[in-house]
Length: 94
Figure 1 (cartoon, helix red, strand yellow):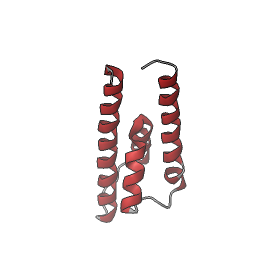
Figure 2 (spheres, rainbow, N blue to C red):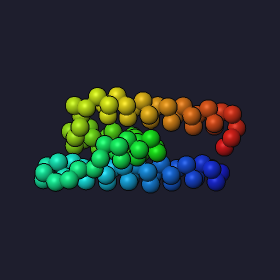
Figure 3 (cartoon, rainbow, N blue to C red):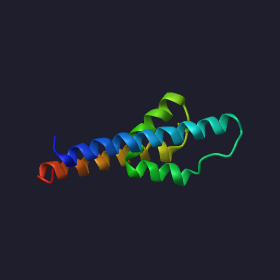
């Protein structure tokens, strides 16, 4: 693996870890009736490549599974990101 591949690997690990932590924090805040993480923050984390971790966390914890923008939007964001990486890989960028 070259340097760009390693960077992307660690970038995805870190952004997904952060997205998972924010999703868990929001779930705990909801259960304890405390101030929640704004939806805009969660969506920005998803767009920054934390969508797959956030989506899986939501499914496991049954958190926000009734909201269409998350249940449809997060997989769409992940698929678009995957396609971008695939196109870059096939074009020889890394």
